[in-house]
Image 1 (cartoon, helix red, strand yellow):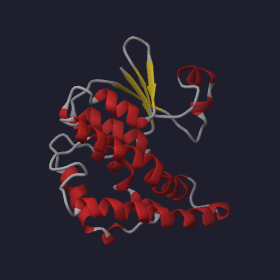
Image 2 (cartoon, one colour; image 1 turned 45 degrees about the vertical axis):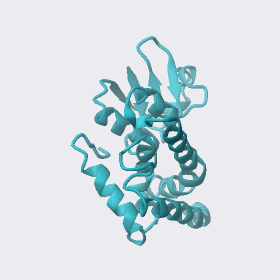
Image 3 (cartoon, helix red, strand yellow; image 1 turned 120 degrees about the vertical axis):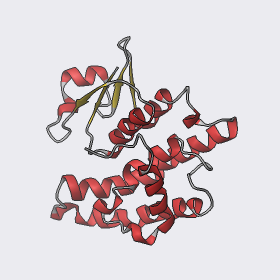
Length: 198
């Protein structure tokens, strides 16, 4: 299989991290979003939405959206939950990540890290801080109760939220305010098959 992505993107990196944790063989194809490589005719044929990550299966079929890719790749492992309730809780956190976390933390990081915090986007950058801290507080409260987001073992809920949380400081978020998140980050990084952003 092939995975199209930008390793510095949290959405792409979490797919890369999962492939390492589960020893999934694949070909990684680096895509430069700032050079509009996701908007070429050939890429849009694979994903009309023009976004990464994108998974190309051996049979030529495609799956887009990072959390959909995680669910597909981890479908035969315990990372997707061990009962209906835990699976639903994992999905709950993944929806939270895309609607309440990523739009604030990832966008603030993009404006700062990728664009260099241009003057015309500083107001937007500062506006993202409130929503980002709200999301981090929700995570902090859960991680005060359990080692991982859905109990005592790592799941794709953790991988989904780790992608942008562990680099939230690049978007202006001070993680020292969230000691339980910092311990959670250490737990994930201590996994024997962990790989960081390259």
